Amino acid sequence: MHLIFYIFIVVALFVFEILYFRVADKFNIIDKPNERSSHTHITLRGGGVVFYFGVFLFMALQGWLYPAFFLGLSLISTVSFLDDIRPLSSLIRLPLHFVAMGLMFIDLGLYTLPWYFWVIALVIAVGVINAFNFMDGINGITGAYSTVALVSLWYVNQYVAAFADQNLIYIVFLSVLVFNFFNFRTKASCFAGDVGSVSIAFILVFLLGKLIVESGDLRYLLFLGVYGIDTILTIVHRIILKENILKAHRKHAYQLMANELKIPHLIVSLCYSGLQLILSILVILVPFYSLLFVVLLVIIYIVFKLKYFSLHKF
Image (tube, rainbow, N blue to C red; front, top):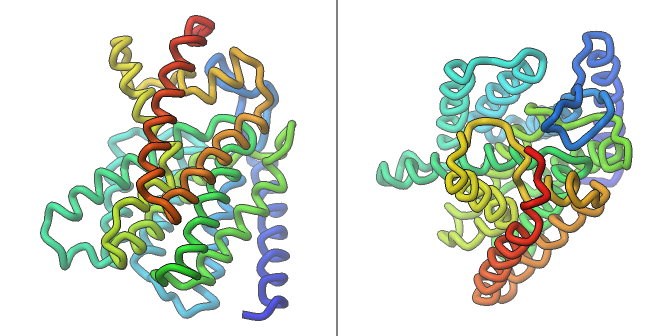
């Protein structure tokens, strides 16, 4: 596609985001800080809806290439947006999430494989979506981390093994950059909201699924490895503490860094995305060392928690 096409996409994404801000302001779609928040200012919520709009533009301009995936994304984004406006019961939200992922699996071609493949894929997809939702707690982290994941996927698609339409990756990348313009700030103009964190996770799961199905190589799951390590080990930690793991908390490593150690949000976000960039490079170039790096990150997490968790207030 020509440069003028991508300029049009960027302009359309900016216009959409600004129009959404007006709607959110009019209907009071805001994020109010509470005792478990890592921010202190009332901020517009749901700015991550631009990720969905980016995929919509791709589908409209490219001939609805992945219809089942887009239908699943539409469903899960709608449910998440409604949850941003007024919290929905998990009895409503979770079944619809599973339906959305079931639709995605059609375009991934998983139903042609033995049943245990798509069951495993369902568990992984649920884990990734929840990880992105849990980790979306400070300025810049969702946008910066998603940027690294998309760049990694773009590189593999371009230079290693083609697995998806490159324009989908480009346009989603541009939507993340537009979101970063408003969110990657000391005082963010908007937060991603559930609609943003869940939809970008859904998109990344789809692209990773396409890559893994085409290549048969599970090591690409490490393109989301830093989030995975933090999420899994934090759950283990909370189980050790005999806490309800479904209840909101501030025990992730990034929350300790931002809240108790008072490290600026953007520095913490760059730390996570930088570590993920190193891991992704190792996955692509020297897979064995990527596993050693994962072990190193696990050790760093444990040492960090042992040293600083005593500062935790809740």
